[in-house]
Image (cartoon, rainbow, N blue to C red; front, side, top):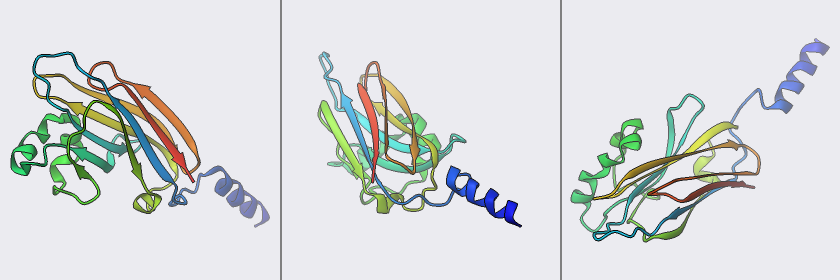
Length: 169
């Protein structure tokens, strides 16, 4: 019995018994590069979290044309990876998720811990996808650990610049 108790304590300390992590905030910072093209349209951008199995866990944000929601929604399928992983099942506009497209420059998304309270501690991937009319599309993946303060980053090549995720308490 004593060995079982010690084994359970060791497993709990190592995170092997994963339950919901104490809610911290998740902050995503991403750069939308300025494009030198004749006809520029702001990109549609989706950010979401994937589990270790590659399945979408939660959409964090979707930026698209909100001035004409019907037309904007028609082009969401151009965010192909997000659309196939679960975007098509999301009812838009979604409170706290949907937003207008953003201008080039540094953009920040803060997701308060209460919104991620049911997310078990563990390894995840932040995925950011951008698609632009008359432009390219790009996906950047940033592995991170949920459950303790940490930061991680990656970089895109065309439609996305630097992408970072920070977990705080």
